[in-house]
Length: 185
Image (tube, rainbow, N blue to C red; front, side, top):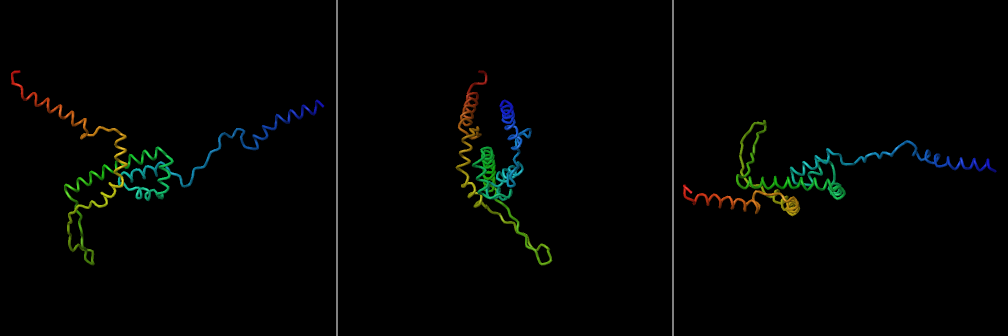
């Protein structure tokens, strides 16, 4: 009886080792997962971010990386780092739009129209000046609330902020005070 018991004990001890080998757990380490074929690469994220910053247009940025709008919004919802990059890119794009609109409001925009004849020679050139703000204003209105929230969260000191104006007033008062004193004092 003791012989059978020893065999059974050896068999019981060997059982977990056999099970581990069968499941591939002995010495193989962690199982590596293959990346998704439709996953976002670092280069795709950078291209999306750069396009969004340049155009302030989510649809255009999604098109440049070959993704649908639902895919990019899903990634934004799932990945907080991507959402932060998205917001930062939108702020940059929004600032660019503001600057462009201001520049065009002050100086206008020129567009050259060239008319060619059948042989490819230039028949006439016409320069049109205008103020094409329609698309830019629509994009700014679409993103203004989000950008304002982002700017408020950054607490960045702006050159036209109340603190800057207060410092300017103090400096002007100090200069005025020096000008009122006699030269010998």
